[in-house]
Length: 415
Image (cartoon, rainbow, N blue to C red; front, top):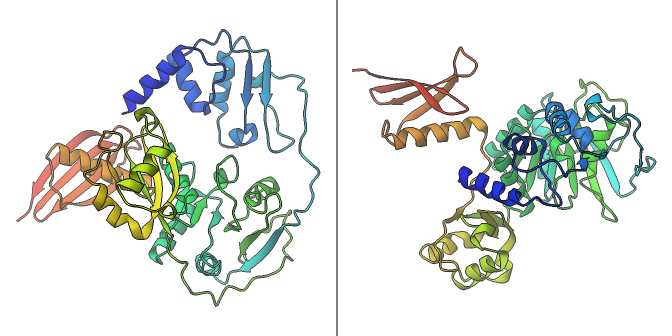
């Protein structure tokens, strides 16, 4: 599949497009491969330039600019002012076009403070979520570890959520957004990566588990709610020992959530995965027609549909999913049989690694189904150990995480 995707991208670039859009890493990859000629590239736009600097894309952006030798226009787009322009941009005397309005209070946004008795604030966050009447919310944290810790906590309490941060692969991040957009999960836990530039529907609630260091990021987070004429609420969870930030008014109205105990209602929809997309000549109308005719679904049973190049996702009313999958398991869509199943949740990298190792060892017939796994780091940074156990059989596996290349496989037996 990876080879096929790459070949299609190369074919699409064989006829030079008028406009090429991509992430810094992907464009660098194509420049290395010489997928397209740079002779006629006259203009370069670096969108979200300030955020790209924060995320450490200096090398990628420097390489891109260095390869585009015929540029006569460089445009740096930033959502914040006062960004220092690096020398590698080769911009000496920039023309500044400022569309940033003078700061004014958003009258449609209400800010409430939730004081936590506990320093880790997890229980206060849970009680706050229980007080939102089962309405969706975005929860912002300053660190990836906190994002995943909150996800684990909510899962342990029976609350479905998903998470989004820079440590996830692109397909995992996209999967998280799809399930949040279509209502399969009500809560998205994220870092500042989710504060801007994402296609997320209007939110009524934004929760700051941590306050960001800079006011600009606080503003961008709150920009997910109270847009245009809509209203919204930003909640800030605070413990008395936290270091205060200069930009925030700690005299805001308090909210007591200590009595909120009712769990949010389960999501109305569940996401289904379909193993076909645009390149397979599938579109939204095909999927709706198939689910309506073969699956006997009503219009209100089908939610948001997203069709990608080779896969698709569709939200289906949760109560109808089981019967639907049974009805369509042997049916064809546009004359072809596609794999249709409940879409998996976003996986942490370690859990994803376990699954990959397990499948690899099953394919090689080294193990059977019922082995117990434990993965630990090796003394060498680029290696890991996988310890497998079944009754009296033990397997020690040493491998490279990035490539899953097996370096050593040792089997022992005990009486």
